[in-house]
Length: 266
Length: 265
Ligand SMILES: Nc1ncnc2c1ncn2[C@@H]1O[C@H](COP(=O)(O)OP(=O)(O)O)[C@@H](O)[C@H]1O
Ligand SMILES: [Mg+2]
Image (tube, rainbow over all chains, first blue to last red; front, side):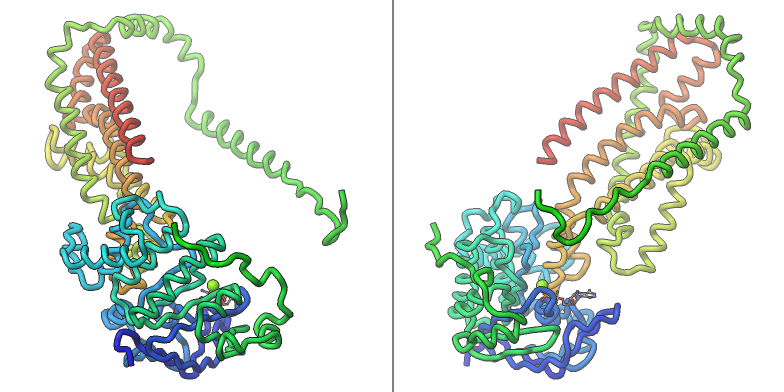
């Protein structure tokens, strides 16, 4: 067993948004430590809702989620922040602070363990800077450490965001459609980074994807979501045409596949 | 052109009558206000002779008066700088407090916003009169008045800038377990910094102008000098003072546009 990753367990999880809309319905799911899982579904199926419940960005309204040995229901304040510090997140639109350096963005991942006054004065500990630099090295973008985040391309920004998640030394990384704003070759670079992190560091990875082929290629396990319910849970390689119809409500077309092959990083 | 996909084209909504109504209301209010105040156009004509004399004097600034204006000029600049520095320091945390984007506590938000609305609704001249009464004549009253005046402006502009920022970085920081304070410091401060700095310079500009006006009620600086020369109808002195204000404001304008260009790349 790998001790770097944490398991995630959903038990009868429901999310009802304040406006009464039901985002998730009775979701049961067990993700093993160190597993890499891809979640697919139409836009509006509840993919974002699902991953956002894992770090409490969306509060669950029924059931229970356990990350490692921490239950999420009703978790708040310092204990919620502690849990979040062990769960990294990568967003569709990168979510970087654009007017500051790449390094400052990666250091965001160290805020939880940094005191308020050190944060205020930007008096970062040497260890934290070292950790941030190593995270940037892992995604091969350390030479941009002192560049402004706004100067980077989309793919570079997403790798900075992955470095930020890594700087947390997380047990879980959540990625919410991390490639949706990227072109196909860059998408593969980002997905391979996530795959490498999962394989080398044993961090549990849950990644939402719109494209089924990306999900098949990079996720060992595929979870299909439709209208807030799990309609498929199995190996990506086993997902055939009928599974596709169950998830997307229609048959496969060329638009559902990302065209290009992986490319080497220059 | 192929048509008829998805039904008929919509007709353009008619909105011209709204424009007419709005214009009519504005015109109505303006006419009503002039009648109520008693605007008397003939008075301007009757005063024409006086006005011409005054204008001629104003066109001829007396530069020999310059050395005597120096202490007041210096005081005006000092008042503006001190008031700007103090208010800029206070306004930053208060702005974060007053923005929906950076303060999740809606009760605290409401309280701060209410207080700031009150602070902003009082005109600078009224603050000056108040402090002159309480603290006494002089620059200190002027500084107090300017600080409150600045706070009202700065907190409004900076907190609204915060409201309009992309909150992605903040969301990521919160998702990594940072408190709101840390997330705001690390992700929102760098984003709002250019606006904050350029508003600080704008406020400094405002203060040079405002510090001349509040001097009229005894709150120090060039305004007190203006009050003196005006009482003795020394318009060629007055015009020198106006010229000096003009020069400072233009210099500041140059400085601020330079700073803005460097800051907002
Ligand atoms: N804050 C919210 N309030 C109300 N409804 C929401 C909210 N967030 C998402 N939803 C709804 O929940 C459903 C699932 O959304 P989401 O999880 O974002 O789907 P996906 O990521 O698969 O596109 C959608 O119908 C969406 O409109
Ligand atoms: Mg989504």
